[in-house]
Length: 253
Image (cartoon, rainbow, N blue to C red; front, side):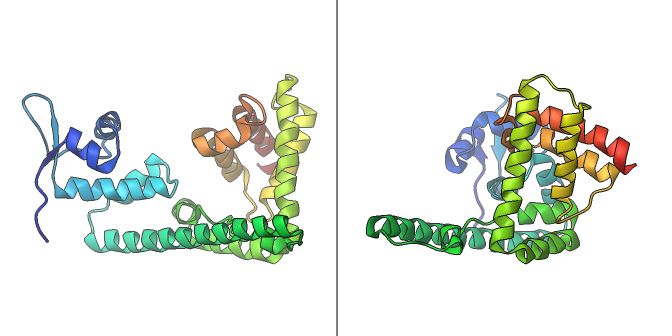
């Protein structure tokens, strides 16, 4: 393999699409340390750092949080790195196929609307895949938990899956209304909806007190989850976390 010449931070930013500010942040948190820093303060990167950045960017594309990325890319074992990259490659290829399916679904929907024909529920939702974060989930909770969850999801059937997703909307929107009205985490109405949430989660995995509290913490710490709740009411993710802690302490300990 030809050796990649050393590039300064501006060149790496231009070629990778990552801002210089982000690269400096990665350096500050120990995620991506440059090969050297010049007398003028410029950071320089060589092949090993660029390969590490590629791995980081791939994991970011898969929606993996930075703290999880750090644990993955810090491995010093080349065989482990190759195995992880192969797993990521499979995930990327599956995502590519999912987008192709989504494209076919949209095209079929357009044709159906134009021709006045009907589509089955399975045809309407083809390509909308709940396993898009599976690689990250396997890192967080292990293969057995993810496999059990996937089997439970498939066992629900198309109608059961739609009902399950609808139940979450009811829970989140109800909590949003209570948050807007000023309800606290220990309010009876809030706790009743959190009980439904615990039952909703337990379709796939029954969390104990510590796990349920941890899940609530993740709802705040992970911006994707926080956004999914906060769209129902500002600060709902925090209320959800606090209410889950109250529920866990009262019912799961």
